[in-house]
Image (cartoon, rainbow, N blue to C red; front, side):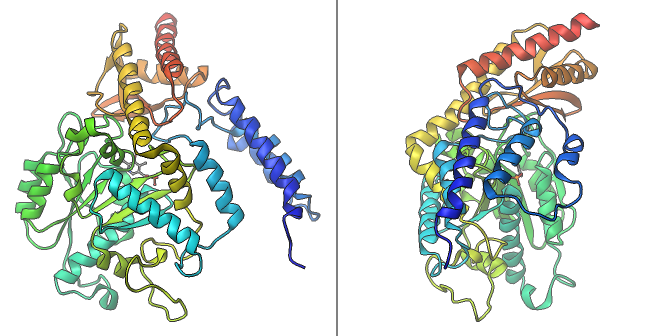
Amino acid sequence: MSAGGEPYSEALSAAARRAAQWLATLPDRHVGPAQSAYDLAAVFAGPFPSQGMSAAAVVEYLADKAEPGLMAMPSGRFFGWVIGGTLPAALAADWLVSAWDQNSGLRYATPAIAAIEEGAGHWLLDLLGLPAESDVGFTTGATMANFTGLAAARWRLLADAGWDLDGDGLAGAPRIRCFVGQERHETIDLGLRYLGLGRPTAVPADAQGRLVAAELDRLLSEGSGPALVCLQAGNLHSGAFDPFDAAIEVARRHGAWVHVDGAFGLWAAAVPEFGDLTRGMALADSWGTDAHKTLNVPYDCGIAVVKDSTALRNAMGLHTSYLVHDVEGPGDPFQKVPELSRRGRGVPVWAALRSLGRDGVAAQVRGLADAASKIGSRLAEVDGIEVLNAVDYTQVSLAFRDDATTRAVTARVIEDGKVWMSGSHWQGRDVLRVSVSNWSTDADDVGTAVEAVSSALAAVVAAD
Ligand SMILES: *Cc1c(COP(=O)(O)O)cnc(C)c1O
């Protein structure tokens, strides 16, 4: 007899109860973890027991023992890297995805997941103003979403140069010249490396980290042959957007494919007031973004969007006879992402979009930027604090007197644990970076952030 719900119910109830307890600690727990992975190794490693344990007991054990090693990333007081929180509908939908356990690669085999993901894809293209005919694939993150777009670019550029990449591989192929902004995210380089495209040429950037279109034109003019240009929506340190209009006009003149890394910045296109930041972005060929950052679905989910579906499906598809797949129309999910087998990652995206609605997504993104702007302007008034960037989006980079002070303030903020922010290095200076990416960050959290940074500075100065 196959298992019904009964063997699962006790463990699932335990998981629901323990998850609720964890979420309830988020408003006021110390944000950082109390124990390191070294501390916890003793708990989770050791000799492998020969006897099993009941499912519910496993869940309780995990929840008890993991607790001190958890970082309050889903808290509204977490401002590190660019992480994002979790919307209730997205979290709950993610649980359903696990319970449904659909291997979501084939449209005919898992029609509900295919339809949900296609629906989410259409909403996204509409919301972000991207070409309606584009293919959308759900990946693990922006690294793989960018990789997917770049793989489609490689296929198209070589096909147009008369090279059979699938048959002959890369050795002896025409060289693809790759251009990235000086301040691109390093995972773009990683994607290019996965694809055997080598180290890209870095195009100089301005004071906010935006690629300079005239410099791109100059560098493209120095050579000839297939070219790939990677632009960025949302600089990690300044939140700045590359000048899409000008840069894409240049790239087109040189026949280049344009990919946009918009891991957290693509979502600015959902907000009419941010039209200046994203103008021209839709004229690119491919886009990579994350759903786990600005949209706030649980880890993990990235989204690849590629206008040229022939290029994408040739780059990512399988042509194996045992897989019955759609050759026309929407295509099978596995033709749009690196994986064959995968979970229904797009389901929490659909749930997040459905719970917010178009206006709700815009309000969420606007809210993140508003909070960043308030944190930036209030901290700029504090003696000894410099805001280094123009806070037009969700990122604030702060510096304090000198690098040593900045590092000490960063350590102090993290140790105090009221908020969590990353130390980083930008344009020759150490910085404390504030990244607002959680839907639940509210006015109180903004106040806590301002207070935490100001009092950390006061403590560091007093100890001097
Ligand atoms: C986070 C980020 C990435 C990488 O995304 P992952 O989801 O970590 O794979 C790429 N580019 C930018 C601008 C990012 O912020």
